[in-house]
Image (cartoon, rainbow, N blue to C red; front, side, top):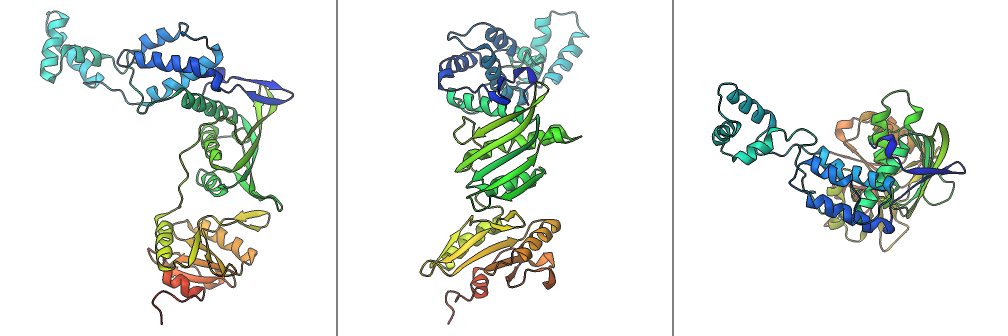
Length: 390
């Protein structure tokens, strides 16, 4: 998490305006990356000294400090890279020096020989775990000026959200991964139907609304931001405490934020296997991974699949697989489905769940399974003839 003094923003009319890095910053960002690359393999303090001097391209001081922090953050998070573990190197050299009056070079030579390394490698290892003495390492993947700018912008937004009291995110498309992340990371979140509009709204409590575990919660909330890039459209409004007063932070589709890795298409291997096997077993049926959510009590349920016969669009079923989830989650999900009174629902329930018939939504077609959901059983449940059946 960024320190407060690096948060580069301004306030205009009660709205927080992050000072994002854009294409106009790319020239000096490329110079920064070139300087970093030039110092790979040298002690960190040498790079730090160079970065305290002007770059070949003029750079805004506040933006430069922020970009340097992001560039060096990955370096600090890595384990120390040295030919000999620094503590072991120091212990052996100091122990050897304590029993001889020889020169330091002679001591280093003898210890290096016993470790099968060169004197230079041993010398580099002695204090390689000290921040300023660590050797600058090349990035694990090549970083462009564009990527560094986007990562810097993302870190800035995440730090501002760390000071949020509450936020609302209106989204269209790929809503399910956002809701899944919020639930798994323990965010205090309500999913609200947008009254006939496309998409949904997530109303989330911010870290400043809590009394404890705010740091952990703030990190979990920040992880939600890069997922927004995969939504067709989004708008985020957050009430953040900035300069001692509550301000509004606004983000929307198109803002230059580094995206997360593509969301997983399936929540579990059971779901992935079912989709693959059902497509093979019933080629005349389409399998839709993320059908439209169901509205109940102003919240939304996200079925796992939609099944639709291609030749007859009227034959359409929603399918939910209740397998690896916790008992509390299954209970809440079944309660919502009972209230929704969905008539075209297939529930695939893991036999280990031991769900009583009274717990199940009235009218739902039930398929019980163990380890895998049988496509033929699903087809029988919806009154379709399984392949090969007479």
